Image (cartoon, helix red, strand yellow):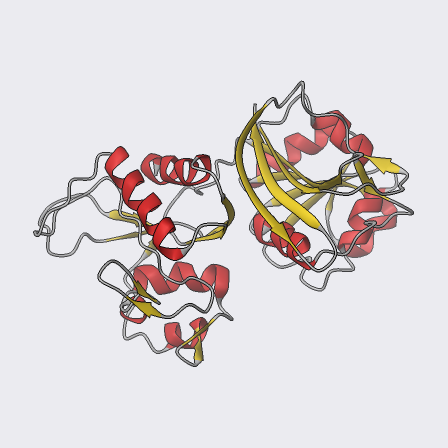
Length: 311
């Protein structure tokens, strides 16, 4: 598991890559290798500016950095990174075939891939359909998440002038940014204030693979949603830690201010424009001077970048 976590950190630290989401981890038997430790497998979705071959080279360099020794024989290895799918790219070169030709044969690929991309189309069928057609599955869920549940993460979209909201809503509509938020927080426990939570429930998949701790003095007003409430940030954090899930602090302004000195990671979508607003993100630079990952993007209206900072 430490090798997997190191590999993801190195993928991002090389630049032009952001981890969007990570599947649950699974153990499987190291077939054909005798009495050796079981393997741990995950599938990861990335946002990247690298082309497929550049991404493959990044992966191979990380394997080498983490001590993998390549051999014609099947032997245990510290890490094995495969590029499975790259958008709708189809290619076959000496270095890389896309999609990976053996995805549909391997339970240790299909099961975690279905966890994060069940609706993805591959060869005219959804990943979920390919999984149903698999003859057998011999995996066991691994006890720990790849995302350390003891680390406190904050996530927000912020403009150049630090605006994060106006009249209770985002001042912009960027589909990719919202998709990134939903991907990153899937499987997590979200800490947020009451107003932010009431905005969140407008999202059709708000309940899917997420738990919530809502900071509010009006707990009865949220009784219909069956979520955990807490009167203050410290109590909320204690209750979130009890879930064992990765924790994401999701706003609003006062909630961000309360957790900024405590957070281990900061995940920002930085929109390169100024907006009018009434809600602002606190200046984070003194707490998070170290940017550890970034990937640029744009749509028809805005330029923006996804960034990650660590304490």
